Length: 246
Image 1: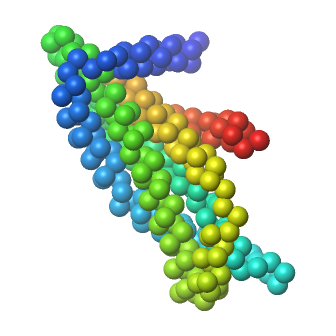
Image 2: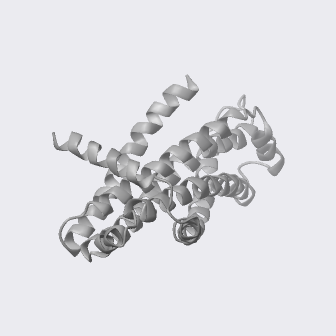
């Protein structure tokens, strides 16, 4: 029963959050701030992780190709596919759920326990719309950009690893990256990224908005936001894969 109550409260909060903002100028200012807090500040982490994961994927593929009948360009092809189909949209979203999700939940939760949200309500402002909607919008706009950076940097990391280790030639790797390309894989990755971005921002916003208690409860809400977002990302990853690739 508690689960159904949580789902109902979440849906009602989303209805409040997605009402038209009272002042467009205030919404745009808050959106720009969330772009920096939720997107730009995560760019460095995404680049570093993607670079090393791309290198790891390429090295593992090279290690497992022990049949001379398998062309070396398979390394580049596999690196590209793994980065586009799964790593960039899903693994990066799980990482952002820990970084961005906990930040959103703790920020809004702190405002709740210090009665700043109550003050917004007294002033006639819709707190859910003012606090949560810009974060959802910023995440859904910026996360696909981070995904593209992740794909490009990951492929570059795989190419660099092949050059440094000598496991494959640059020509073979680049040929593999360019081979058997299906544009729908990028569309599939973007759809997943948008869904995951909505999950991270909305679930984290909900957990922070509904905090009751003090600073200890804010910490628990931040942890719950990361856990719930991660679980939902995995569940919807399976659902979207079943819907879009079968």
